[in-house]
Image (tube, rainbow over the protein chains, first blue to last red):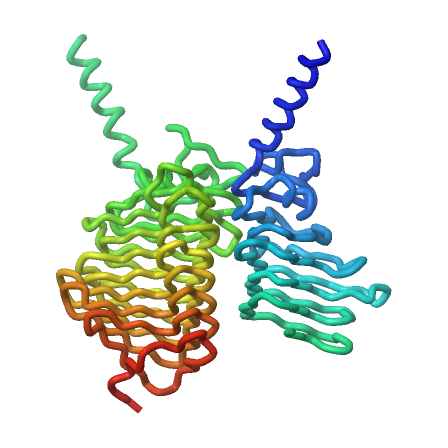
Length: 169
Length: 273
């Protein structure tokens, strides 16, 4: 019985691992992070959807809303999708990209860093990151901080940052 | 009675063919692919492929809301317009491409779309054998070819971004093409211009080839291949530019071509400014 349970748990864990999406969706209107992040059962946050998305996959927003901060350690595209997706910065940064093994793309987003948070908008460490059509507003400590790796930046606006808007090291 | 039934069935079969739209609509939220949906704004379809079959040659298909609308095989002139609402195509394994345009299609326009090719799919973003315009399209994931244009056609590409192509971001062969305001990055080859059985000429302007193994490659692979580049950025690549078999790159001398591990052999044979 014990081994059967272990087997069942292992199988369940394996099935859960297999149930990742290549394309995941988030929705302010109808999402829940307990969902499978498909278009009919979208998740609520980027972080929730990220956890259910394969390496090399994409997370897209279905509708306007605030989708939370996210830490990225695998190749992925986060696409606000032109519907008015936002990240409200808290803790360290709006988005942290750290040691991803392939391209990370961040598109069509607004990241707002409130005065109460001494945060970066986006922090990228030793990764290959593309940032496109992103606005970072409020009072970020730094709009975009890149340390190691590579970055291609196109259509980024940073407003109100102290002490720097974009730092590349 | 028997012949009356056959006549009735024939008439019914003919009705949907007559009811094709000049403009069709798809919706993630309220669309469905059934014989009862008309692909109109009040009765939208669910996928591009279904709507395509309900649309006249020369027509247009537009998305009403954010969603994933499936791959599509195109054999007639048409416009596929994601419509700025967040429309996507997810390319499933076993497919050739997200959008496949055959040589018989005539003029096809693809606009405002995000195409994602998952890792291991071995698929292309867009393949075209016909005259094609591609505008404001992003292709991400791991496509073998972001865009592959071939066979005596013409292509106008504007506002295309390709990330992570395992072979080529944009591959143009036997074709006359213009590429503008586009970005190709983190790919094996950024933009490739190949002559094979007929001359290939590509004008690239205001575009960026960044962080690829090779930024731009031009190859007389059986026929003359020429790339003309203006106001482009070629940087961060392992090799900036490469010419093979006498392929020619002509510069307007206004490009930022620097900061590659190897900028590449000096291919800029003619100054036009």
